[in-house]
Length: 113
Length: 259
Image 1: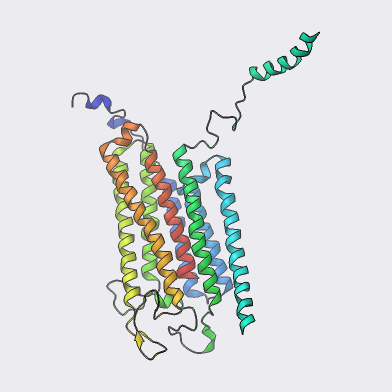
Image 2: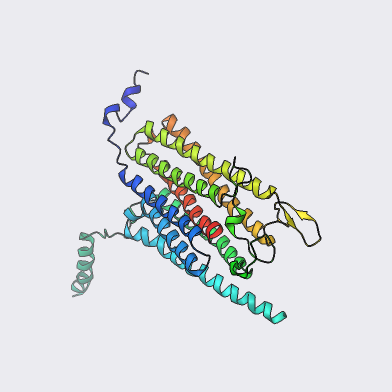
């Protein structure tokens, strides 16, 4: 225990003050968007417009989580693009598979009816 | 004469040797300004996103192939295998409020719990940057608590989904069926329950792994492992994973419960 204090690199008084304002700001943005989504669930009839609003709000939420909480906004540009380009291609693939697959499924169904 | 012809390439060679190649991608430095572990965590999360995208693609396709309920037909909504169920009619139960119609209330609570656990996770990472062991411990404990609460909520949601609503649904063979399993469910098409189990189950498994990693981080922080190492990067890496799990829930929430 005698050399315990010397192995401790940081003394009690040296810890800087926390800087957490941006964290709570991001939190309130996320809560606000979620609340907005619930407003749309109960005030709008289901349809393409409502679904589009949900998807746009979801992308907003994803942006704040990835950019601020996962700190990607403050990384090097090369790292940002390394993550974003495959994700963009993946979303393209997702949309293409759903729309083409729906068409293909209907075509097969019609062929047997 | 031959010496002149050889000096020409030599001088160019020496002139490049005087200015060492020190660009971003010439080796010997970190072009991404991120450590190996953090970079690999990003790439793992990217590959994990592929898996969840496969689930969402399947969900989108099957959802499209089933007709939607038409609210303008004049018939009130009831569970039927003829169309895809409306999520607010399926997920309308709340623990302690038996028999009350609380559309999506419990899911909203679960979403808030998970977003809040993300906030406490960022606070733990921030405390790690300041080498504040006590704060890291405090926020990690809160994150573990919220993560475990989310898992417990999901367990309740599953058991309610499997147990079923009171009315049950009249099946084609004349019997009444309550709840859901992989081959039959009272809410709608068979694949509705299957997709619910697979997508929320896969996400729940991720949350469980995250809680295990957080418990490891808490133990290592308490033992002073990270403090002796001089940095709390492990907390940061587990934080990246934890936020990704939150991110996936944002998408599952939209596509399974809202749309």
